[in-house]
Structures are given as C-alpha cells and as structure tokens.
Image (cartoon, rainbow, N blue to C red; front, top):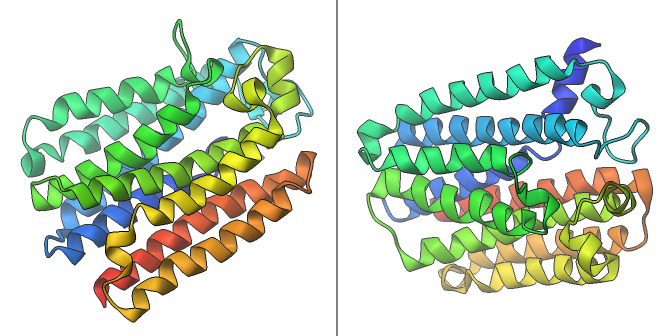
Amino acid sequence: MMIKDWIEAMRPRTLPVSVAGVVTAVGLAAYDGFFSVTPALLCFLFALLAQIVSNFANEYYDFKRGADKKGRVGPRRGVTEGTIKPKAMRNATFATLAVACVIGCCLIPFGGWAMVPVGIFIAVFAIAYSAGPYPLSRHGLGDIAVLCFFGIVPINFTYYLQAHSFTLNVFLASITIGLLAVNVLLVNNYRDIDDDREAGKHTTVVIFGRKWASHIYLANGYIAMLLMLSYWGENIYSFVCPATYLVMHTRTYQQIITSQGVALNPLLGATARNMLIFALLLLLFTAI
C-alpha cells in the first residue's frame, strides 16, 4: 500500500510532460546533426526528477495550507489521507531535489559552468510553484511557470547541451511544447475548480472560469502546431505529426467539455499522452 501511495504522489499520469520536452529537444538536435546520447540521458533524468520534486512539494505544501481535503475529486493524496506522513513527504521532496541537483552537476562538462545558475533557477521554481511567501500555483501564475519550465527552459537547454547553440526554430518549438504542457495544468485545474475556489487557490481557471479554460485548451493545441510550420513543409511525412496530434487533441477537448468530476482524471492523462505522442512522432519525423 505504501509503495502505491508514493507512486500516486509522483502523479504518473503527468510525467509524460517532462519526458515529451526532452524527447522533442533530442529530436530537434538530431535533425540538425547534433545528437549526443549522454547529455540527452542526463537531461531526461533531471527533467523527470525535477517534475517529481514539484509534484511532491505540491502535495506537501498544499496539505500544510489546507488546500487539499479527504475524498477530493482528483487523484488521491497520501499526505491528506494520512497514509504518508507529512515529514516523510517533505524529506522525500528535498532528497529527490538533491539527486536531481547531482545529475544536473553532471551536465557541467557538456554545457560549462553556465549550467549552474540554470539548475539553481529550475530547482528554486520547482519548490516555489507551491511553496514560499508567494506560491505561483495559488496566484494565477502556474500556467506561466509551466510554459517556462516544461517548454522554454528544458527544450532550449537540452538542445544547447548537444548543439552548443540556440536557434529561433528551437525556441518556437519550446513554446509549442510549453503550450501543450499548459493544457495538462488546465485540465487539472478545470477538474479542481470548486476545491481550489474553496481553498482560496486562485488558478487561472478559478479566475476566468471553465468556459474560458476550455477555449484556451483548444486554442493552445492549434497555436502550438502553427508555431512549428517551418518543420511541417520538409516532406510529405511531416504533416502526419501535427495532423495526428490535432485529431487526438480535438477529441480530448470534446470529451473534456462534456465531463465532470472524476471523469476528468483520465482526460488529464490523455492530454499528457497526446503531448508525448506528438513528441515521439516529431522524433520519428526528424529521423527520416
């Protein structure tokens, strides 16, 4: 039971978000002839651990602030339900962060000492998303944080660690992945709007409402594909990638606007799955 609780605390349905970012960056680096396996694997591990840190911290600090309650609509929270001790979750958060930092330090030989402030920046915001005097997730800034730390930062720097350069196309691709990651957060907050409002958690969905969130969700997917137009004209196969994603994305959107409560849980996973499938198709396309 304990192992199951810790796995749930990692929020496995959302972990494809960090994986997709690294997969996309690796595909773009390979496309430009710069693929390097060691920094790619290190970036993968760092991104995955950083997301787990953020998820652990979110569970711990939401519990401390009373933002979670037993029997919540979303996935079960072990700390709130009493099956994981708060101290254990706090210790796990910072232990996982320490491991992520060690892996991040292993990237210094590939990117130089400039990787240190980048790593510190990521580590601080992984905690600051839920903690500190001004938690981003409670003040309508969660979407911006996700765009930045699941899109712009990981893709540009994963690419840089292999190619030692930044490009406009990669930057646009990083916004693409960031927007798809924001959609995962939107579904999460769309589902939790009532609990969040009651707890005084001002997500963008609480501020602007479910209808706004559903429109932004749909628009994000189409805008994301448009941002990568420079890649879709390379050959006839390239159009399979955005077309496949948009079919999945539109179907998931239609299910979201007709669902409530626990029925939204699998659609959260579906949104993350769509993002990962897009990244894998992009990787396949770049290898052709």
